[in-house]
Length: 107
Image 1 (cartoon, one colour):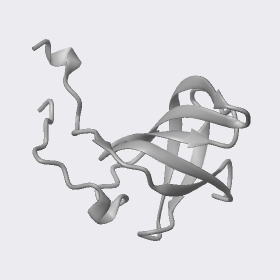
Image 2 (cartoon, rainbow, N blue to C red; image 1 turned 90 degrees about the vertical axis):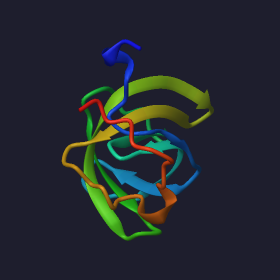
Image 3 (cartoon, rainbow, N blue to C red; image 1 turned 135 degrees about the horizontal axis):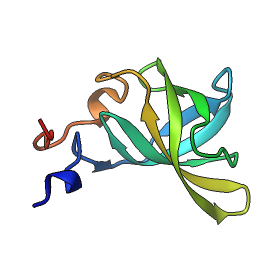
């Protein structure tokens, strides 16, 4: 396997509620895939790449600053598919919802 194809952490398909916003996390979103470094999620706004967002996990009460790294367009009216990454490492952000079988760190 080409090392460039490896992920920093394992992806887990998981639907979780999150709150998102430019300054304060106020708008409801939903994850589709999570990992230790971010998530693929459905958001209520069409935020472009490099947009910095505040995100809150209501289950763990953890908050994080993240940035949009990918915008997949609209999944349905008023819903946008976004890839986000945490700006700082947040290993506890997802709590027990993130429990991969093995870590596939690139080293």
